[in-house]
Every structure is written in C-alpha cells, then in structure tokens.
Length: 241
Image (cartoon, rainbow, N blue to C red; front, top):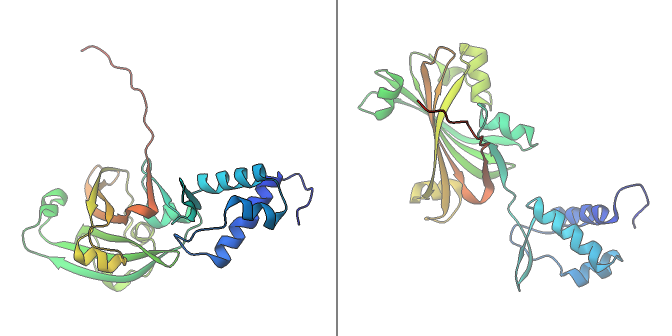
C-alpha cells in the first residue's frame, strides 16, 4: 500500500486517512479507532498515532478524551496584520469564497457611520458569504454614496476591495479593527444555518485611504467554529518622557 519514496510513513498514512475522511465522513462524524486503523493500513500503532496528531494539528480531526476522534469543521486563518478583503485572504489559503445573496441599502436617516465617514448619505452593501459551499459569514460594508456612484449596477466581482481599486481607484492604506464575541440572533442564525445563540465573532473595521481619510466601515460576522484570528505582537521599547 505504501511505497518508499522519501515521504515518512506516517505522512503517507495521514494522507490516506484524509482521503477517506473526504470521501466517507461528514463534520462531527466519529472516525475508526486507532486499533481499527492499524489493521486497515497494516502499520504500527505509533504510525497511526503520529498520523492522527498531524491531522489534529491541521484541524481536520478533533480527539475527545474517552470518546474517540471526530471530524472537525476546519477553521480558516484570518490574518489581522495586513489590509485586504476576505476573498483575497482566503484565496491564499486555497478556499473558495462565494456570495449567496447581496443587497444594496441607501441610508439617509441618522446612523453612527455617517459621523465616521463624514457624509450625509450612506450606501450599505450586505452579503451572505459561503466558504467552500457552506454558510460562513455575514458582511456589511458602508460607504459615502458619493464615493461609489452606481456600484449597485457595476459590482460583479467576488472581491469587493479589488473592484473598488479597479473601478473607483480606492485603495486602503490602514485601518482600525475591533473584534468581539457575540451570540447569533434569530435572523443571523437563519442566514448562517446555525442555532440561535451560537458563538459568532464580529469584526468591525474603519478603513482609511492614503490620505488618512475614512472611506469604508465594515462589520463582518463569522461563524466562530470555522475561524481563528492571527495577530502579531511586538515588544516596543518604552522611553521616559
């Protein structure tokens, strides 16, 4: 079954188990115990254990003490240290992000984002996003309507930020982002196909152009069990004033 090609045996076994999971198992399914896998692949228990450890590190499976090993809902990594659209970030991780629905709302009444963007009329673009075909995120992007004229008639790309650069010459230079944990309300739960009260993460961002002018405010709501946030911290030297 396995060949001597320079690839460690446990990695070859890991790939075989992964292939089996993709073909025959769903999220939260229990996969065979180590003893069964040992017999199936005719390798040692140590090899099976190392293969499972790699799958667990890759968030493919989750070991539960006393219960067994289950198929995980793989989380995506959101790198918060650079500016870019969700589509751009996830495409680098070889995930397919698509749009299930989209709406364009003009807001002329009082709204806190008007103060942030220093405008009188807002345009809000709302989208339900699918990750590899599964409900993943709710996105709301706010703009001064004068900044993006007729965008509702022009927008035809999955990546909003790429479209803004190509069509309106808008490119973001920096941003402020706040991340908080929230519980899914009834409407959000229906859109994401989850139970009401399920954990979500809300990422609220104010983005600025090269002239430090606020251009966009966004609120990205992501399913907590499909997501992890990466932040790089540094030790800045403090000086006495």
